[in-house]
Length: 150
Image (cartoon, rainbow, N blue to C red; front, side):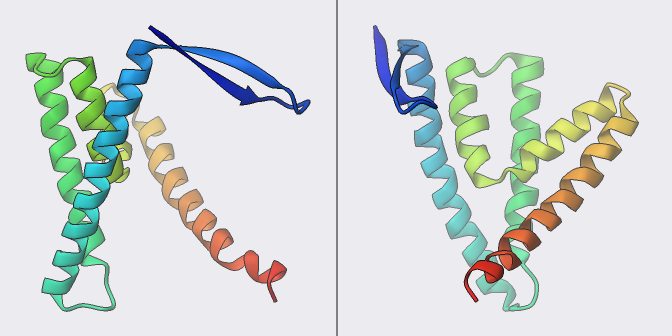
């Protein structure tokens, strides 16, 4: 079975794109996993922040990011060395659940893979650029709208 989507293109017309059933199945699995991961992130980050009693440091976010990295590491090990999860389960768990739970885990795994592959300079550039540009993007997103809505 295939699905057809009408997608707008640059000249205000529409192009029909045909998507296979397997692709759509993965999209649905990622969406379900994303929902679960986002809810889990919201709940866990809130609980950790509440337990810490801190209003000045994001303990909840840090806990979620570290736990997400650990879970992604275990999942990657099980997939890579044991072949435990098939493609659909990987979409559900690694992209959907953990992708919504924390994107920091994906960044960390990709950086570690660069280090393991002997690409230390590339890994360092990835860390420096991601953190630097991420901070700049958050700053820009936070302060540039002030130029519009003064």
